[in-house]
Amino acid sequence: MPKITVGDKKLTFNNIFYVDSIKGSDTNDGSLSSPFATVNYAVSKCATTGDAVFAKAGTHDVTRIAGTYDSGGLWDDNKAISFIGERGKTIFLCDGRKHNGRDTHCIMFKNEGTRAYQIIFDFHTGNGNRTLNYETSICYVDGSSVRGEVHNCVIKYSTNVAPSLMYGNSASSTIKFVNCVFDVQKNFTSSYTGIGSTTLENCITNFTFYEEGTRLNVYNKCSFDSKYHISNYNEVNLGIGVYSGLYRWVADRYLFKSKSRGYSFEDIEHNYDFILSSDTSPSPFSVSSSGIYGDAYPAWKAFDRDIATSWLAPSGSTTNQWITLNFGEKVNIDMVSIQGISYAITSTYVVTANPKNLRIQGSNDNASWKELYYATGLTWTKEEIKTFSFDNYEKFQYIRIFIESNNGAPYIGISEIKFGFKMLKSYKIPTISQRNLSDYGMTIIPPMDRIVFEDNHILQDNVSKNAEGFWVKKLDRKPLCISFN
Image 1: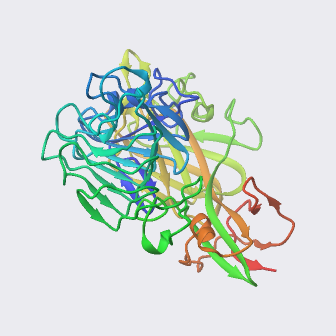
Image 2 (image 1 turned 180 degrees about the vertical axis):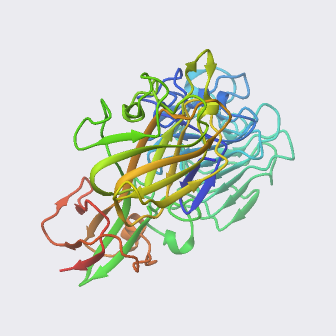
């Protein structure tokens, strides 16, 4: 089942649908490589429970025009959906200026299992006559119960009126905000109904919340910068705001101190970016397999970056088939992405040809193999991408996907395979302040007792500034150790 890490938590879903407001299309399949264009369309593709919508960085117009009372913002269609954004970079526009109904709202979750993580909601009530608490409330849903949870999100209330939290016609409404920032232009007013049905936990606002509902560790009149760092409270120690909590915006970095200077490191993913045009081209890459199903399905088709082509093992070979890539040199691999196949062969969809049990293996002589990862019980949807990550600190010249069995078709096949590894990016930070601690890492020291690579990288002054003015040096591999000069 696909997983995605949000803050300090790894979440598992049945399906993850990706949305890219710039490069996506609602005629795509919603995979990472073929994202949808709109969040609302992704919602329509979600099952009743267990699916997630991941919205890439950018502005996504989620405005839903439904009726006089329930138009405006993000709607879950009464499905238990997790909406996930890139921290500080994903914006959901909830635009009441698009309709002339009486009300506009922002959070319109009807299912108690719905969650939102790491999203900036840009909420416009629109219509200048909308000033009453039921017209300008943040939460509402078609005369029913507002439910669900909102974690580490920003509610940017972009209209100059007094906001309210809830317009609810049901006492069973149970909306909960955790580690959220409410960026408003006036003090909150009371909710129209449903008082006590909202929970604010570790939340802040730059004005004042109304005294209602359940309030745990809530702070008023907070000042914060353009990135929503709080300047008049110690946000990390108090556990408040978007940079705290389980789904915090703090990057997965660690802060070290040496000779009064700070150094921080984070993992970034790197994919081997190559396209094969034959089993032996381009040099030095070459690919081999246990066999092929006719000339149309050679092994190199799994590396041609075309999802309409694939490698297929011989017909009737439903177990113990393999495909091997020779990199021509020893490389480190700790990620493998496999895209399943779905196009028609002999008038039959061959999703069932995709691997059920597989082993990812490495070798330096193409004879003796070390197992790097073992996956069992895999099931696939059309053109689904599965990514397997694992700890591996050895270099191998050959990487093999050994497929023990498929899901029932008379073929075994794979549309596309990509290999990758994690790199380290380092930051040299002028001071170890509370702000830099939030931006560039926590004081928890990561495990440094494993041999990773044989190179010793030393951070010196021959580095360059990034866009934020911090000194940055990219390391091409994981280091064995880190030294400071």
